[in-house]
Amino acid sequence: MAFNFCPNCAAPLADAIVNSESRRACSASCGFVYYDNPTPVVAAIVEHEGAVVLARNKAWPRHWDFYGVITGFLERVESPQECAVREVKEELNLDVQSPPTLIGAYPFERMNQVIIAFHVQATGIIRLNDELDDFKHVPPEQVRVWPSGTGPALRDWLRSKGIEPETMPPR
Image (tube, rainbow, N blue to C red; front, side, top):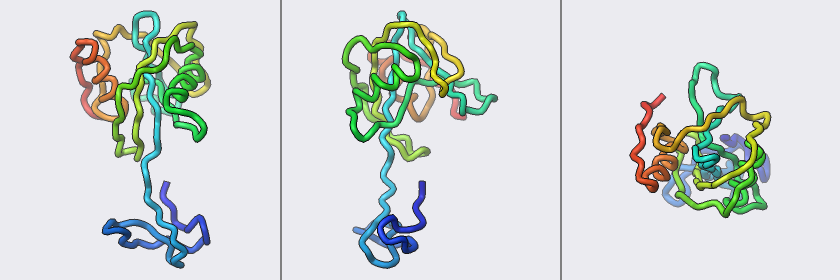
């Protein structure tokens, strides 16, 4: 989201050089600088009944035949691990069986996000929340990864299990 006005004094933002970087800053010189930092997103690679759970978001275009891992925005009052557990429960109604295992942090420049990815083992019966419209269980050796977003995290997790996944072409 781009700011057009200063959230402190409501003056228009203007292009400025701040610490040798091009930024948007308050034109009234109140000191506000819009840094456009990335948003933290947590991803959970969910293992359930010996397979990886991939889900389809209702908001994605119908012509996309795409399923992804479980993701959500990190809340102000939670750790990334707590977020992973919460998102798995909210989106799939599954219970995480042990603390999430960190896979890594990945830039997702197109969405101005940084993805903090975890692996979780989960149990229970899947019941999708209102954000998702479908899911599938995929044996790890049959998972195909995508080149950006959460795809590199899924690739790295599969490689840690000795599986070299096929990569889908970019959309």
